[in-house]
Amino acid sequence: MALLKLRREAPADQGALAAFLQGFSIEVMPRTAEKIADFRPLLPAGTRVYIAHIDGTPIADMVATAARLRAEGFEPMPHFPARIIADRDTLADWIARYRAEAGVRQALLLAGGVAQPVGDFHSSMQLIETGLFAGFERLHVAGHPEGNRDIDPDGSDRNVMEALRWKQALAERTDAQVALATQFCFEAGPVIAWVERLAAEGISIPVHIGVAGPAKLQTMLKFAIACGVGPSLRVLQKRAKDVTKLLLPFEPDGFLSDLARHKAQNPAFGIEAVHFFPLGGIGATTDWVRNHTGAAGAAD
Image (cartoon, rainbow, N blue to C red; front, side, top):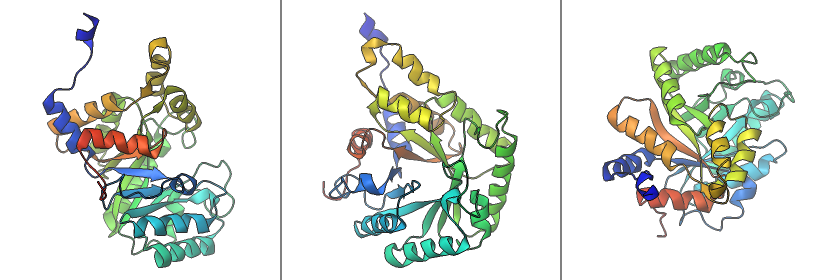
């Protein structure tokens, strides 16, 4: 009888999820990309691939990864973490190298994970104000469905909302397509409330919602705590109390199905795309996507 209580996705839900996943993006680092012989069997042609720039990664490795992804038929989107960029000349050099060697025309601008800036910049807004990203086709900036303690230490979202209004003004004055790329979350209800609040506040920037790809629960908890995931961490903590599930991978089926169903019922809902953090490995994430969409790489 217990089996009867298990949640099963109806065909309509499966169709909504497949549609919701269309145009998904994924994130890699140079050292994780090196482990993949060829991305073409894993990802649909033209997939946007974010390249995370961790403090200490040589720019040469970042550019080489972008060039490799471009050559394999994907759209590289490197991170530009403000707090690890020394000055305007360094930023200009990075942009020039990305453009010349990898045809980069999309960028994710963010403050970065280090506490103290190494140079002149501490926010994505300062990077944009240099004017050096003129001519880029797409600029993504950070969104925070669960707030951000670095920006609002008191737990409010006052500074976060002020920054979002600035980004809305940017979206209205630039020729680039602007979107909010978020940290990964685990609970659909608060995400839906946040996206709807943005709309109520007049912030119409499309949201690319961050999702953790399948991974062991212990791995998921480690990354969630390290990355400062907010209240939705309770989803993992509740799962951790069930000893029967400790060894099973945690997958995003429920979270994404709930969002997909809401999007299908409310087409104007502001989530435009899904962005995967492959915490359990790139192959595990792309296999999960393929199983839920039928999407395949060019070599399949």
